[in-house]
Image (tube, rainbow, N blue to C red; front, side, top):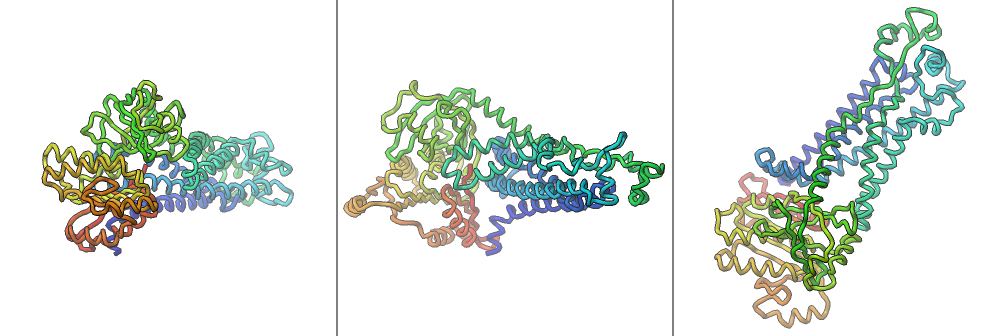
Length: 568
């Protein structure tokens, strides 16, 4: 079992541990540097170890902010995916986990930001207390520096009666720190699964507060509140000899008054590259937004699914890819991902859209989805298209055997795949590496089968004509029905074709027994690498992942299941 887990998750675990290791190294190295660095000796007298906590977490925060935009740079990931020499085998599967890594880095930002904020609250209180009458000795002497000419201050809180909150909000660091904190809270809370499902639009808009977050982060350190002794001052003022002679700093030449300056801001250096990269992504999107998209066909299916056929100059795709769609008539800012359901061999590209939120509902209404008649293209709202972008399903032809599992509208990625198979079989080109496909579709609404059944019927007929009936095994499962449907099904059970889909393969009722299915597939292909591709809910995803681990052989010569999940 451990060997099977390593097979599917080993590289992901190594990458996550590497990320954690870099974070721990940066934190610990920076922490001890600030604990021991001579130029911050006097700063530590006032602040203690919270100085090191604040600075170490700040460096880790910068590191993770550098990483956070890379996993969502779609064009970059698609480019890397297409470079098979540089990205082959298990490394390609890591690209499909880009959003998971994006979330992981976001948690890293949240943890380090929390440590940074808490540490600076303690620092602010210690700065404030060191100006009180209770502060004595070296602490009081350091806090009063800057009150006379030719002195630089160390303590940014200049008087004890000052309200620390008001004083903080008068500084660049305080204002930007508050903005960063509020932006982070807003982004994190609106990214929860509950919010995304309840209102994708809310998630989409609030996520773009990241622009404010990065701008504030870039200028956060320019206030230089945390100060250390200058190098020139260190060469004249020997801390070992002078720290206990603070009363003589004004009079003894060997111990001149120490001079301090703020540390040069560095956050912008960390984030500049990724921000420029992401800006290029947006420039590409804007350029694609300007390109004309011609809508050639609109079909409204009974299951509440809208089918759009489109053309765009220079558009090239591969099976399993997706595009981002914008409808300026509905929103001039929102882009939504949809899987392409057409094959590369067709002279158009298509998507199937189900109403699953305010934006998609408005789109269906704008295209007159209440009827099945074709709409007049001239009267339709304009659409903009960005993409296409690669996903896990583009790797399906790299396996000799693949298992495709779809739940509900999650069948759309496999439409393009099956169409492409149909064309490849028709063209009788070079034999494919892929020799067997197991297709499972689980759906609770019988009407949802309507638009996809025609494709399966065409594929079924073509495979039969080519003598390749063994190539595709499909299993359709209906999980919901009423009494009238049950009676109709029972009445026509003995017919040659299925009463719901019209296919030769009968529909199954209920849910698949995945243990039996995987056991049979493993038995049929005892020494094969089998790609498992899934698009659907998380609960079923976890089940399939477990099955892949359970039925993969520990023997390198045995059967191995490689799990791949669609994510946008």
